[in-house]
Structures are given as C-alpha cells and as structure tokens.
Image 1 (tube, rainbow, N blue to C red):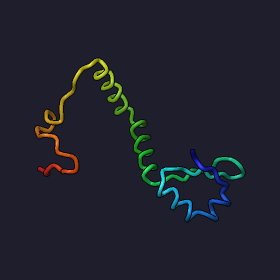
Image 2: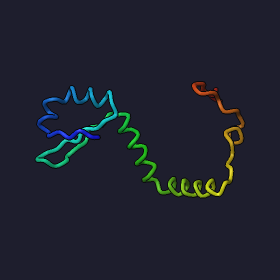
Image 3: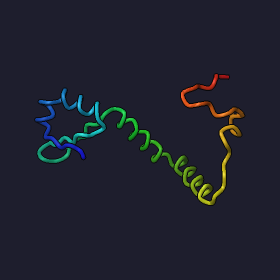
Length: 99
C-alpha cells in the first residue's frame, strides 16, 4: 500500500524517504493542498513501468502480441530457440559468444 505524505513532510524527510523507497519496492504519494501531485518510486520500478508503457504504446507490437496469443491459444507450437538461432539455449548466467 502506498504511503501518502504532504509535500511539506516530503521536503523535510526526503533523504530518509529515498532510502526507504530504494530499499523496498513501495511508493510514496506526494500531496499538495490535500490532492495527489506526484509519486516517488524506486528507479527499478520506474524502469519496469516505463518499459511496460513503451510496449503498451506500440501498436505494432501489441498487434503482434495479440496475434501470438491467438496462435498459442489454439494449441499451436512456435519455433524453439534452437530453430531460430541454430544454437542450443545457453545455460542461465552464461552468455553466447558473439559472432
């Protein structure tokens, strides 16, 4: 659950709020005159949200996702990693050599 604080408290406690937000994935709603004005979130959460919005805002990509969901929803199978890249899937944590 998001913590809600007035701007005056945020100004006073910003260093400790940033430490809290950085350590936990929680957000702080900042109010001005009793109304929500901004949200503080940790950077990783911001990056995830931004990436999600980028995908959702890309019409071509969303169309391809819908098409793929219909394809796999009918029980069909797509190509494997090996089919696409002609290499076995690398073990987690290991990188494929560059060509």
